[in-house]
Image (cartoon, rainbow over all chains, first blue to last red; front, side, top):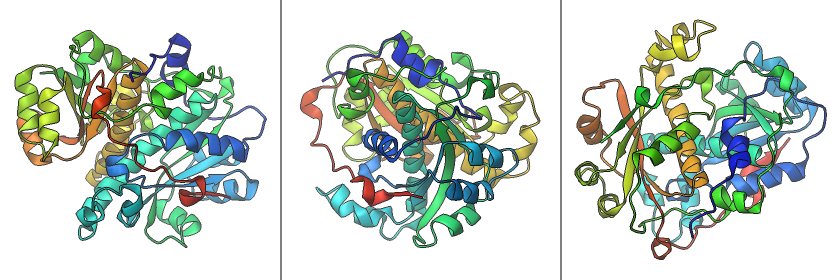
Length: 198
Length: 198
């Protein structure tokens, strides 16, 4: 059952030469592209299959501009100009879905009376799913520009008003990256800096 | 600069047929394996290159048993029996590293007087890095068993006592998975369930 290890080109695509982009080449992102990305990212593991992420995908100019207006500094122009953007939200009441997402036990009861536990799990697992979005997009040949500089409360009000248990986690642009818009890669730590073997 | 899209085998390895394992085939995980996994995962993007994750890799029986004793229910035996385990921690004082990790601006000052902002960013970005660990391990042919059922405070005391600003986020076993130890895959949502296109 062990997966075939990726070759060098695959490792480059998802990690080694992949970069965060500030701008994109012309060309639309389609609904089919988004469905393909989601069909991959939803396979990534979450604790008790919580799948707490809630995605709002912005393909139209109006939606992108609405998000751009609530984003900080240089992020605003990047969002308006990108072919697509996504808001990765998290449902603080994800436990209400566990009876069908994790049907073999009463996982709902683990969370039902503990909003703080739900907050921690929603943040952790929707962030995992946000990383799966970045990797899934790359695996399908797209580039991404993840950002956390925006007004979370305003975005929640603008995009999740009908889902009061959902909070925004982070956002990203995506498309086919324009190489002229990347910065020099920031330093990566040597193994010894942040790792210990015991 | 666009990455070569992964082929079907690659998509299977990192997402589609990859599974969470409860047990592993015999065979050691080596320090070289861990360094290769880290060299990939550290390339994944974090906000302002924070890289807040702190990893304790457990290869020896004593370390695995120490973590197992602090883990809940069925997780305990899985950890002791696995070839390797990892504790993914997060440094709440990650901002002290930003002068060298994000050298072109004073990013340290964005966080220096805001412990709550640091907590949110450390949790989000160390979770992203935890997902990069899962995908990087899979990309190199390993299987993982991520878990969040353990005594966080006791693990912090046992493994991060010398780093008081570090908190455990989640843990995982890894190795080459034993197919007899996987459960049926939990349901994955249809696109319409948790997605909206605007």
